[in-house]
Length: 106
Image 1: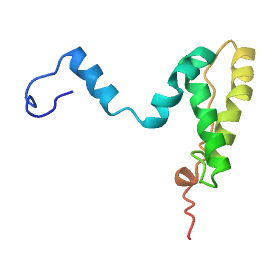
Image 2: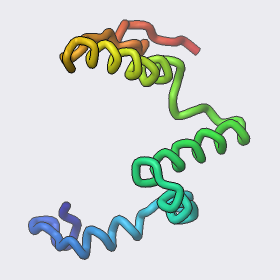
Image 3: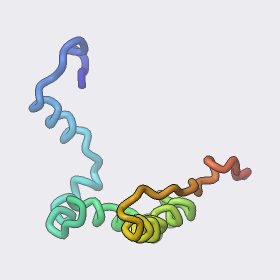
Image 4: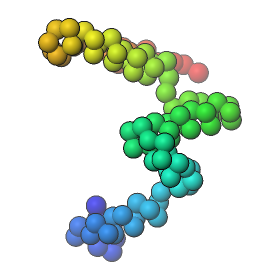
């Protein structure tokens, strides 16, 4: 990372950490300690669940759509097939409307 006035030199790890803390989103500042205590991928599971519930309670669009849900759910089935075939990689089709050429018109 490089920022003005030192844009042509890398900044120190301490400066990087200071910058990350300075621009950390308010919601993360509020819930990161709880998230880390509860655990689950370094607290990220809690943060994603928190965001989902927040969106539902406040009538906001979700950060994932039905295509994301289907794709994430397919991991279990693909993992089973892979294990049964000696841990071979499994092929799968993308389910995103962008990948299959469907665009929603509003």
